[in-house]
Length: 318
Image 1 (cartoon, rainbow, N blue to C red):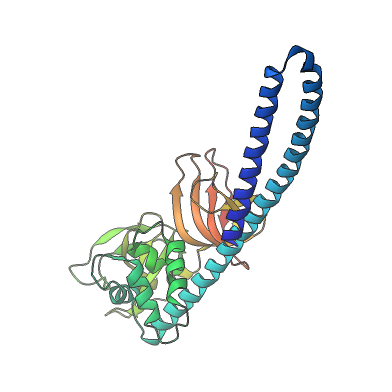
Image 2: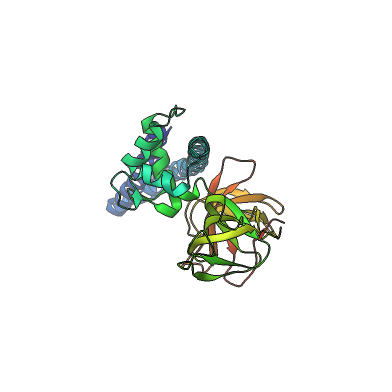
């Protein structure tokens, strides 16, 4: 499809150049004609201009059709890649569950050169090494490009986010440096406020006092530490969820973080999205943007959580 569209674009460009060249030739003929022949030359020129104008209108129709075709194939490619992402996520989650593996241990398995990031070759090799993987290497290379930019490696937090489960803080709780609260090495990193969201990397596990704990990354500031899910008295501090948002007003899902990049999907009020990457500011528009997947669709891209004037576009689902 891509080569066909490129060929059609070349034909359109060539036709436009031919029309422009013909207009120039007619203009030169009129200016160079003898006075006695000028009336005849101008009449013939009008005929040629009318033909050129008719051709230009047909070219405009063809260009519009080509633009629609480009949009269709671009969206189709994006949908196909999102389907691959979901397959890869399922493979990774099955691997973690089968080996009861903390996510950070899975990262160490994949990060062969121990540089703190996942390269394309490491990504492809790790997934193809999973017994249930039936995805071809070339497709995995395409998927890697979908998850990151250019040839940059996939950062640790982005790789772990593929598999992480989200929890919402329902009661203020300390985020600590160690699994066990009672050890002297444990220190409070900060207090988590009600409504904050964390990505669970490990657990739940019970400490020496029987308290159920998870290791997690805080979505708001990226801090990593341990927090209590359920206390020994039965109090609940975390509940599963928090990564799903509801759309408050019509909005476009775009291919890049910039709000004016190519739109690949239109969201309507009431639609639901699942977070893939937490908030980043689009410097060009001032909007707070998140990478999301549209619930019920194999569509992933960037959408504004809030606009530069403070207008909310997304709200957390209850």
